[in-house]
Image 1 (cartoon, rainbow, N blue to C red):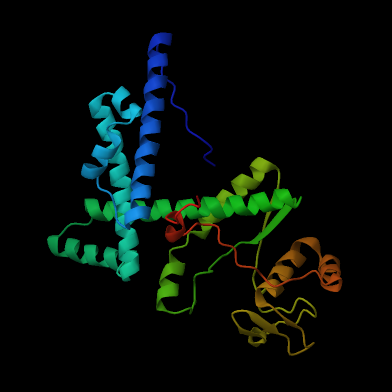
Image 2: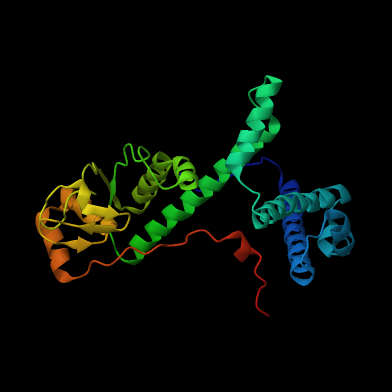
Amino acid sequence: MYLTQKNHIRCNKKTYKILRILTRLSKNLYNFTLYTVKQYYFNNGKYLPYEQAYHLVKHNENYQLLPSQVAQQTMKIVDRNMGSFFHVLNERKKGNYNRHKEKAKLQSIYDKQGIKMGKKMAWLLRKRKNVINNFMNQAVNYIVKYCLSKRIGNIIIGELKEIKNGMNMGKINNQNFQYIPYGLFKQKLKSKCEYYGINYIEVDEAYTSQTCSVCGDINRNNRKHRGLYVCKKCGNVMNADVNGALNILKKVAGESVVRRILGSGLVNRPVRIRVVISTTKLLTKPRP
């Protein structure tokens, strides 16, 4: 688990003090430039490029206190980051943005040129890796924070073996589902649990989706569709994900614990949680 990274610089007190001042000025200039670009978008509905932002920012005291080349490079970093963001946002609005199609198109070009990898493909793969890693971190943080707030000391998760085999959720969903690195998710979750003292338990989830959590009957036809489980033997009707989760819990806590949960009426339908802020929300104009 990566918490933070520190770079130690050996220098005298005078140099250290100068570096502290320069880094603070650079940080302030970056934030001021970013604020200027966002406010321009809120007021005019379009992106503010570096050439125009320069005339609005150059009179800021942070810009004037920094060396001109350093200040300009700081502004160009904002321009590069926000330029990429707005490009992706515009493509998504047009319905043209699809990383899978873009990757296939690039690979076709590379095949004709007789090369395996290019700069654009490397950038695309790195971008995808960063997006997935960011989502995994936020999902794991949400789970662990929820457990800490509710004083939950155990997390039980299926081994998720061969979970990607035989999926039939449609062409697009199947394609997206195949790219989810469940091994990375489990690794991050386990590391986070160990850090906060939460017990992380993996169990074999074989037949848990087909088994009735009430009577124990195993029948693959009991699962009618994605969210409904109906037991033909005892008549139990339950959300399919809840039924599977109870069967996984039963392998660790035992039959009596599951029966107490079912008898208490504390089993609710699963709730979909949005852990990542959408791109449109990032550009929502703040309240005055």
